[in-house]
Length: 103
Image 1 (tube, one colour):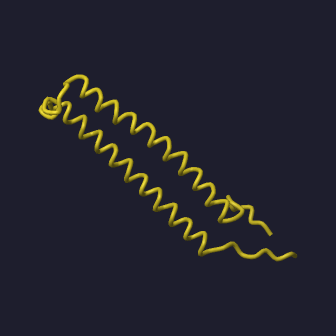
Image 2 (cartoon, helix red, strand yellow):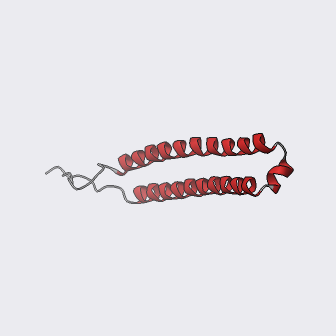
Image 3 (cartoon, rainbow, N blue to C red):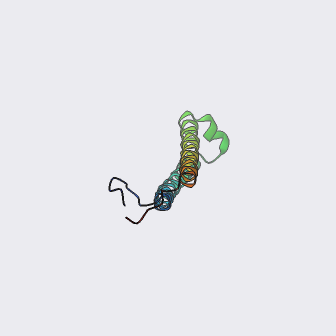
């Protein structure tokens, strides 16, 4: 007997959907955050030319700090999603669906 209130028919289906969602999310975030980081660093380099000038200019230093904070948050987000997926997989493995009986 199927429960019509369930979103997925089995833990395997739920795990597959989690993997697909994670891959979509992480690939988009990784692609754009790396491009943004390179663009800001390249812009600073093009405008100022040397590391010493970049580090002594307040706006350049602030932009680099924001880039590193942004990348750190992306890593933290990726770790959080990975942790939640591992937790979900463990739950699915520890709680298999009940056996269906032919009635």
